[in-house]
Length: 240
Image (cartoon, rainbow, N blue to C red):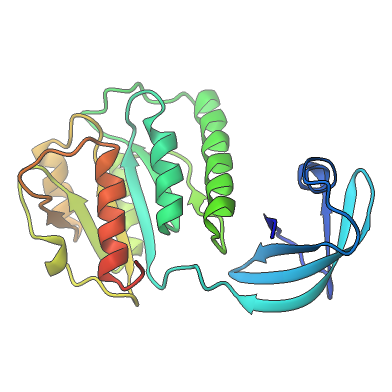
């Protein structure tokens, strides 16, 4: 059944306009009476199309139910800017795995040039679109938030919003199974770029309450690390 996200539920109706309406009518060639699913605020709305034209689709709500696909753990991924289009892959796979929020940031060893205000806005919009498409494909109940870019210090401060804070560090730390992860806690995960982190960055993160995490004797690429660790967090919290 086709799946869409919506911000507005009007009583027992959902009205779809713009690109989604055109996609329903022209690309999917759906008709009056067809069933369609909308997601909003962690709920799924099973609907039937009642009216449609080229620019608007009116659907009647048949059933409302909680989205079972959303994890119980709220995982925020803080990702230092990598080169080329690696961040797009990270956002896509993190969304599929159940990450709730993604925060790009700059650090000392970032090889990629920090985005300008104009390019940063454009890139954030693209990443949000990738997150939305991945959320649809994977059956998510929400679209993960892709935050505006931050500096390293801003990201470390922002991590304090989470109960468990994990800092992936190539020079050692505790194992993930010893981090106290369960399905009822919010988790922040910070991953570096190709060059990893400076020692003073690790110290600042540790002083702010983050746990340094050791990922074994093999060196993971910066696009592999967030995907692998997100999967482990979901497993330890009972969501995978």
